[in-house]
Image 1 (tube, rainbow, N blue to C red):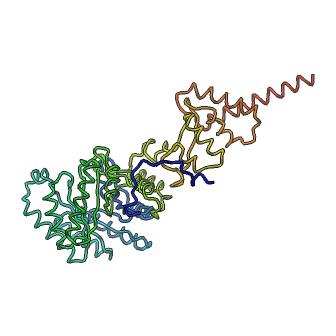
Image 2: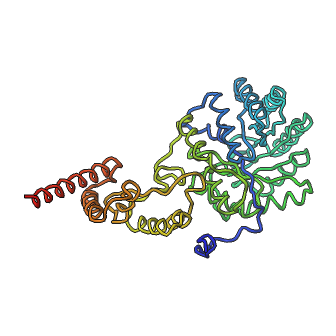
Image 3: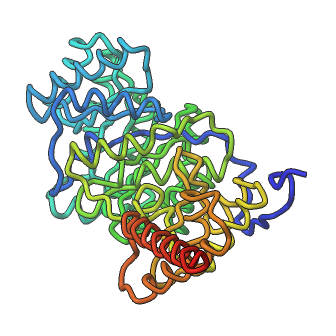
Length: 428
């Protein structure tokens, strides 16, 4: 029986069977991601490669930028849209648009230049704090919402209406704004945890509220979730939103974005695949996408970053290595990839890696020898294990591949010289 057929994992996580198998994802890397104060704005040719990689990994939509920021930004958006369509990649293409005539004109100009139907991701502050800080009048905001959405819709541009700081807004205020937007033809509304305030329980509550509101409207509009990571809860909130039935989740590659960043797209895609297997997404290009964003945006990628960091599938710990090696020895890569990892490295073309260090045991060294010297005789193998482990135990860091190779080569040389000496002695 294949180990995959055995009940080797008892899952205490709640079942998501009642949720659609594919929760859509909107990639906001080259819009909100580039609002990080620490990253670099990539060149247009680099952005073209990034959006193609995003489409390849299964992003259902991509935000191409803020057309109202500058004429250059508007032109880039048009070129990116043309580029994607020319390669047969047609996710939902979105821009960020304020409820301001300047931004609306720039969005419509990008549509005209590209010949593409671009969705206006139209955003407006909705929390009492924002109103107080800006000195806005509530009735003016509702009217502004109506006029702005109407202006886009009548020109053939779909609208996703986004309330900024939704998770600190009053329900009656959200109702007013969403109802105005839906009445004027918005096809999506978006809950934005702009300041990273929400906890998973709060996320669930506001998603239920918005879904009920959409149902009451009778419009059949879709619901999006946009989260930030100020409390370190962006990923948890995104999965809570998915559980509650949100249609689409916004995220950025490596979680880059304003302040401490957004929901991490790479982590989200892997979690959705594990939570709802069979999404149809091809995650094999995910490491390449993350590496390009790291390189071209100067984005941080620490070694302990989930899934994509260098340490994600490395171990030098004896107990862990022993379990992985035993699984490999029984011929089960499936178990070896899961016995000490909740995320199978093979999901996106990576491998479990066993290294040697101060917390290692015999299995770490035996595995290295099996890979690099598969036909070594047992006596020589035992002396190599002892030599390498003695050195590793006295080190404060992991041994490099070259260090292990030199130790083994030296032990082989010493053993060979000793054997030749004994042979010469016996001849005499």
